[in-house]
Image 1 (tube, rainbow, N blue to C red):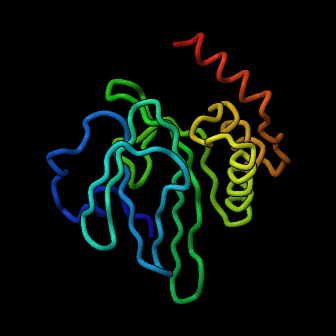
Image 2 (tube, rainbow, N blue to C red):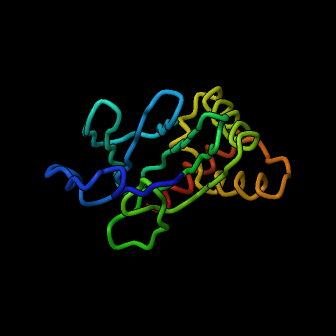
Length: 172
């Protein structure tokens, strides 16, 4: 059922004003059939293709959560969440359907029970008044690794977030 970025674009060229850096995400929304949305993140570009699809662009370094869900006449056939960090055009990246060219994949989880746990973690981070897009990339990797092997992940804390912000300020 998975189709790529070019299939979603239906042979259309990229818009002239589409950014050349970062990640360009193709979103589709057909109620009850195919629902792709951004759970968190701060796009700097948006272009509506038609009433069911649009493109969002994320600047290099931006972290965002991308949720994909699909169903057929018998129920859900796919549910997944990917948390990516957009990269500049010369950096290495992983490819992902609906994301052009790709990004650094911090978390990739499929199956509703695990996706639901990730969504709960995102809500918990927001409950701390922390923007999930500003959370430490290492936390998303930790969550991915723990959920992938069926283990409970450590919660993200304000202390961990302060440490990440200090580390990030030194790295810049």
